[in-house]
Image 1 (cartoon, rainbow, N blue to C red):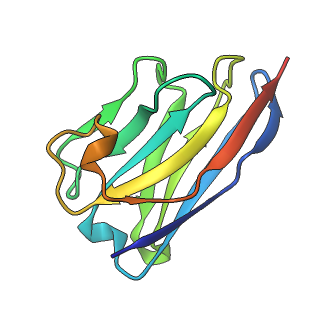
Image 2: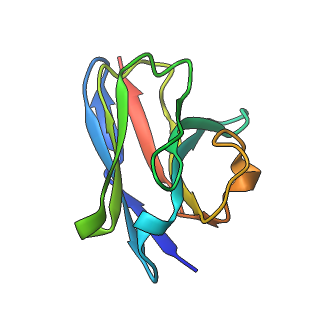
Image 3: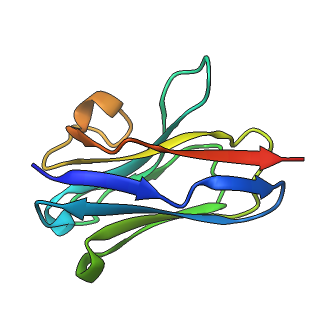
Length: 124
């Protein structure tokens, strides 16, 4: 089973950018459907962006509006989330997730492997 470790979170000003990384070990990420999810205090976990194993399906949350980009570097066995134009509504713990098979790209329960998460804070 793949192990995932996120990094890159931190404090950024409104309108700023961050790159989150999700490094994998134990298996090649190219075999997995991948997703970034986020959870703010008192709120349910929601999908930020995700893609299926071969990239045939992709999904981005309505709130993304082109600001965030998910990508995969197979050589580095890493998935990234590039976040731009960060807003006061974006702070949360961001987690990456992987699964060999998913029914949907939007349901956290469809993903089997999870990282520990990285905190993103946005200051105004």
